[in-house]
Image (cartoon, rainbow, N blue to C red; front, side):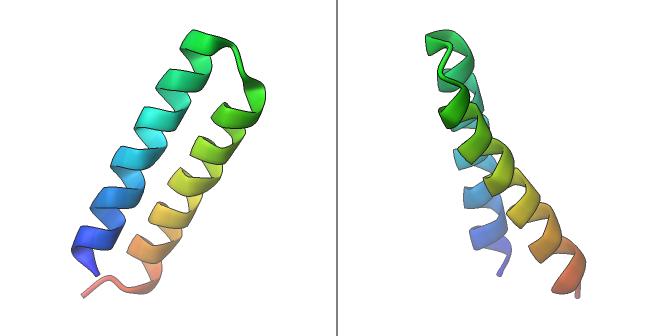
Length: 47
C-alpha cells in the first residue's frame, strides 16, 4: 500500500505544479483530490 500512497502524492504534486504553471484550475483540482485520496489511504491503512 505504501508505493500506491507515494505515487498518488508525487502525481498530485506534479499535477498541482503543472496546473499552477499553465493556470489551469481543473488540473490543480484533480491534483488536490489525488492528495486528499493519498492522505485518506494513509489514515485508513496505517500499519
